[in-house]
Image 1 (cartoon, rainbow, N blue to C red):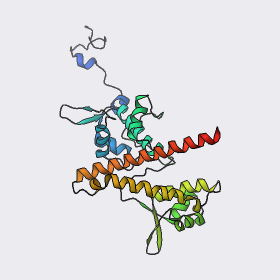
Image 2 (image 1 turned 135 degrees about the horizontal axis):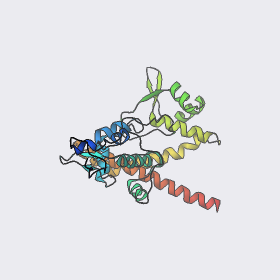
Image 3 (image 1 turned 60 degrees about the horizontal axis):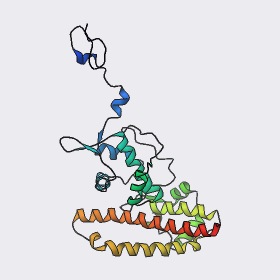
Image 4 (image 1 turned 90 degrees about the vertical axis):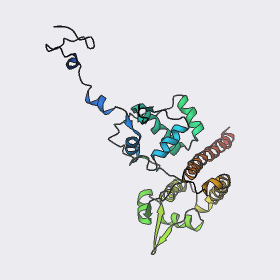
Length: 262
């Protein structure tokens, strides 16, 4: 009996060397490269705003380099999916701009979580911060749902409305709030534990209004464009600039707090 040059194992009597090569284990089959559509589907539960166009935009920004088939289709390996998850979490949880994310990745930044098979989307129910995006429309929640989810004091929510920090949507006498306002209420509830009241948050409201006006001034022509591609690119840029301004505010705050503690 001859030996297989591939595995070193004996070749079956019929001489079929291919039969001597063991099939890859099921785990290896599950971890094969997948299409961009499968990637977005697997991550949508954790990142509801993910889309094929957004992943392609990250590729255009040289943050992702998926392999392409001979037919030109993108295919993503488990390492590519983990890198994408890291990018999306840095955008969502740390408000980092793409330039900083690129530096973080170059320095070896990655999530500690293992790569899950793309057929099993991660459970994001334990995530503290919801994914928030400038793209709409957003889901709506009743006041009762918001109070149950955030454990906020109803008086605090009413105070936030009085000072213009949030704006509920009154539909047939029932107030509804979107994801962004729900997360605002959650954040303010944490601040309220330290004695911060709704009237103290007007400075944040004023600052946000000024920043929004600045970004609108920068991107107004593109955002009003009738060209769908140009408008989509402008929205993606708007989200990136929003992350840049948030990161800048964070740095300025840290600088001032450092002076207090020094």
